[in-house]
Length: 125
Image 1 (spheres, one colour):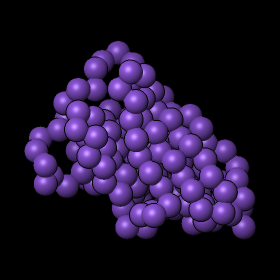
Image 2 (tube, rainbow, N blue to C red):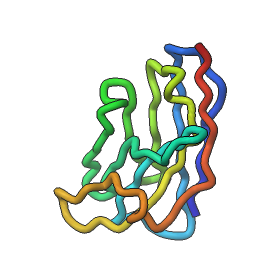
Image 3 (cartoon, one colour):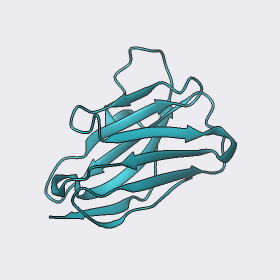
């Protein structure tokens, strides 16, 4: 089970930290991803991290503003959102999939097997 938290309403330029806590299984051998979906838009990839190696991936639209990290002791992955823009407004979901090999495209949402319920992030202008 994946449970997100940390969403909310923030002004443009502000920051939030999203958390995704996993329970019921070890995340060893998994890739943890963050996706977001704005009203009327497709779900889009934001970031991913390999649980064992900690290698991170970021979508071009958030590079330099968002950071992904994990705490192995807490079985939790974080997404730090800085310099937020109104276009970042969306429901943010965390998800998990099995790690296959480096070089895999981690942005394909349909390859993630486990999903959280989502947390709303709203950025006002």
